[in-house]
Amino acid sequence: MLGILAKLEEATLRDMGDSTLITDMDVMNVRLQQLTDDCICNMQENQMRKSIALNKLYSDLAHILYFVNPALVADVSLRMVQFTLSKGITPTAPLAFACYGLTLALMGNICKGCRLGKFVVRLCIMLIFCVILHYLLNLL
Image (tube, rainbow, N blue to C red; front, side, top):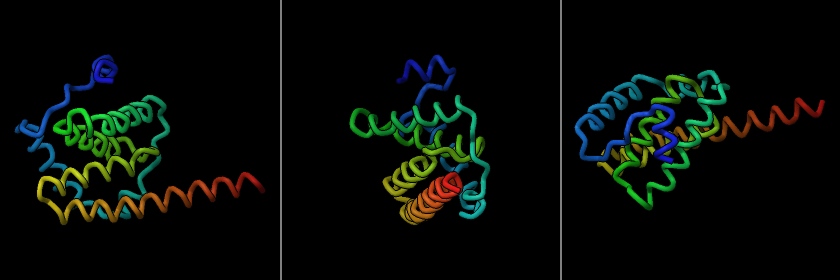
């Protein structure tokens, strides 16, 4: 998977000890504090196949890295959140915010992590509602 990211010209993953990762996470934390949950929920859906595939690749990578190299999960989760905020909501957006919230909680930012956890539940409910609505509209 890391080879695929390299072919897609994605930057090398950074581990928890990297100062640039910590700086980028601090910037993201400030940005997330400035955004309301409604603002994020009302973002446009990202329909670009390449973007969706890249975010899916990152989400698959997050699952694997939890077991293989947990120090890289912070960067993967940060990239998924950055990607979602810049490109729009994808089916993996709830996982992006959940992974990032878990990372924040593990780093000692429990309140920020919990806020994202609550937001993820709300986002999942919204996405499920959209799927049901789409299904019902197609029946008519």
